[in-house]
Length: 361
Image (cartoon, rainbow, N blue to C red; front, side, top):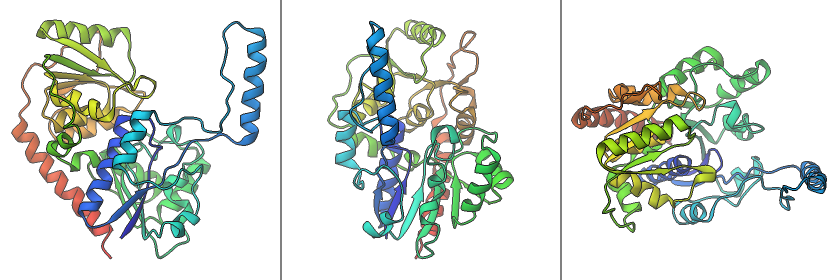
């Protein structure tokens, strides 16, 4: 079956790119032909002209200069992300919007929305209804599926008008699964639909799958604490440096988006070879778990705390959380990986069964 995937733009976010890579890998192993709709964030032509004129006027009167945009594209993939996507992820041609013509152009028989925070308004401005597959709603012959869709938070953020519209669209999606336990409640309470809780796609693959991806990166000879930090603060940096010193290792601090200086393969190898991991990232937790690295997570409330609670609760790892960074005590008790493995296998089976049933012809 030819399956289209709708997700947030594949930009310079390691977790976002790898969840899509994992989703495609799983679908291929189930015998399907996945392709991700390569949505690119763009400005309207009118908006482009306004930004150009605004920045030009600013530059005439200020010593610091703002760039004059020469493209409607708001963000683009850095070369090392572009290389990974081109090599590992099947995509459509870049599009600046979702439309029904994509269905016929690529011969799609099913469309899956997910994963990541595809149902969080703040991260999907202008395309939120697309994340509820509005562009395929009138095609009864196309399977509509949500896999591990995430609201990111455990409270309702939709405005009434948008909530009403998305509720109507959600009722037309035949199979709905969400990534967090709180998402099940939000679906039932605000969208009026039932949902199944499943794993993030990245957790459906094994450590060996990811070791294959980063096999070209030599194993580090240096002992280090890996610190994958999305929102650095002086308090976080102080904790990282203090913990590295206490362990007698160096601190390797790395980030995403503007700070995404590693290739995807190098990023994976950072977790693969780390002696310990400190992170404030959801996927930082995920890959610490996958590679069986001792870790602790600094809860990132602005990006959605419920994601961490739901993920770590599945594997009895809630003791790995740090709420107050300034007064933090980094966990020292070793993780009982045998218990984690048992929980992971159970959730993998549940998640794969959902996908198999949803895609059953």
